[in-house]
Length: 246
Image 1 (spheres, rainbow, N blue to C red):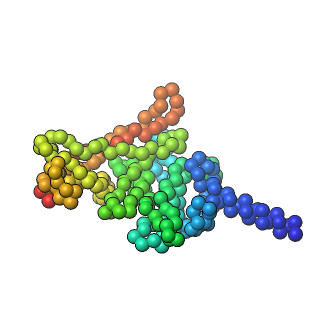
Image 2 (image 1 turned 90 degrees about the horizontal axis):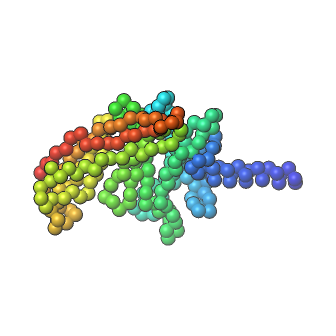
Image 3 (image 1 turned 45 degrees about the horizontal axis):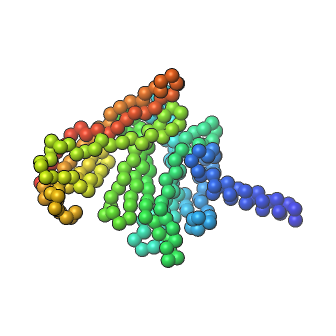
């Protein structure tokens, strides 16, 4: 009886560790991450492991190897997005240190699982360097996607690379304004489009066509003053912009 009790306790400890040890800053093993996620009190639907990637991204003085683990539960609510959780970790000796967790805004609505946000992850090459790329989609946004590109410092801190605001006044005439900007990654780079509106225009109809921009990556890894730490200082800047009547 005592042996069965101890085994039950060990199983329970393992269960709690599996479900709780996915917080930013936690040190875990790869095998702990590479499992389905069972239901817990604040998320009563299990998530399946659908993808695990481990790839290098550029860092100075040497690259870093990131682990991206993607879990997903299929919603049952009508028009719901996928219920995702993505854990990003970096090698920490023979284990993994969790740097970032992306999680859907999901819950049970009228006894059905409903998600308002879903994610996809990949690794991309820009200007000969490798980065982590996260896409975030929102329900009810007509397919709008948030594009986040991450670099990493030599002391294992993730840095989001910002986009320069693509709204140069020289391309806009008096009384024109940009709305509904969307970004796209294709052919190894980012572009954006926005409607050129008159102030009275409804959201559906831009009077003056479309604004276009193509971005390039600018910046480098810089050493922190007085420390043996290198941090990424990058941003996406507009390399070319134009307008069309479409």
